[in-house]
Length: 595
Picture 1 (cartoon, rainbow, N blue to C red):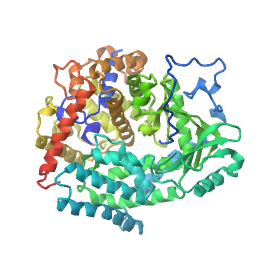
Picture 2 (picture 1 turned 180 degrees about the vertical axis):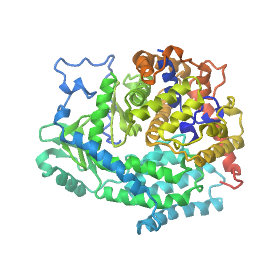
Picture 3 (picture 1 turned 90 degrees about the horizontal axis):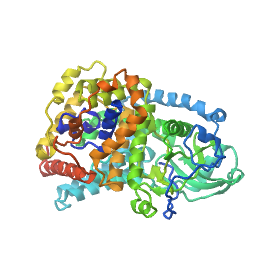
Picture 4 (picture 1 turned 135 degrees about the vertical axis):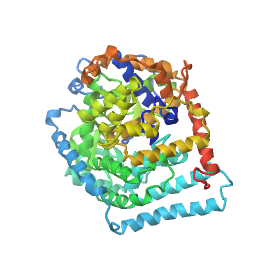
């Protein structure tokens, strides 16, 4: 929690786990002011492309407003898509439902509570017994791996809501224990699929026609299956290759029932989960509900695809493309879209063999998602390796739009002010912006927060702190935040989660990237494209904004004499910090009990 949004450029204690892309956001903005998913088959053999393909003269008409693929199986006309305007109403209705779903009831909400409690108990109790009997031979990693597997299996048995929760955890590298993250990655596309007859029934009911009347072929074996839906390859009667996303039967009803159970359980878990990112269960349930309710109607997802495609086009971000949703074959539970092919985002060897510049791939990813949020106020909200396919020409196809972050103009401006505060290490501007983003109550005494969190303290190199000192600091910060009623707004959570994913992507795709040099490269892009506009929107004179390179270094937990550091070196520093904290907790625990 502390790494997600605390103004951290002045105090090294608060950046011990900060991700590189999050720091890039602040730094890119500084210089600018101076001037899922729907996985598809991964093709592992490509010809090398030295340059971007030249679009044909008769390129599809929808490329005039959206960043779609060059070869269109059909064209999308926003004025003729019936579900586009409806999606706005559906999104508003979904969010209006959240307070009722997350309001704790006085009594347990039905027999589902018993089912959930019994499954979780069956997962956790044997692990506790084995740990007390020292069956793990004093190996904390083996203990964490065992409980992680048990929780993942319990989530799969409990169904879509808990699988989705596991998927969110799987994207939280650096926020959650490594073993838990790795185990829950199996929930992304390895969940047992529904029987094909159930799939057929859903498709035929929603499309109002027999499968054979719409599709020339329809693979009975799913390409991938996850919490809410599964994906099948198919060919339309008109010959286009497509993928069909089909919602699991009764998932909408089950998710709403599970949210009520979570809301009832959450208050009983406050202070009982020894993971900082899970310190406020009721707020997390509300956050989770805000996210998942919009995934239950695919018409909203299809509209998200068009909105993100238009945003990428408006930003001239043509190295990212969006598959086209079908103009007419979209319903609440069925989404037909064009099929795209590419390398999995984690397939570094395959991309390099094909001559793709992996550093350029990750650099483009960081710029694209920073621009989407900061400049346009919209961004993909669920990045992970299964939702990003790198195509033969080096462009990236972005998949699975069930979760999309949308900043109102007020919140986007607050986000800009947050970045502006980072420009000159202005903690008070940052805290006011976080309050306006919804991270703190509007009546919060910001001066008291700054004092309690020691945000005006001098920079401390976190590698010089002992494990006990770091654990105590995290516990102190989390306790103080909860006392002020802090929470992580949905949009900020999605953005930080994406940046944490991209942080891991740098480790795989560009470990020897010179971070400080890359800051200059990315900042130059922002300066050239957006500096004037951002200054105008904030009502500030760009020439009056002081660029503080020492603050940049402090944002990475570095001292002022460091001129160069690779991502690999930075990650080694963070791993040392995490190791010290873990050893302290596992050796005796911050509260004196064995972990």
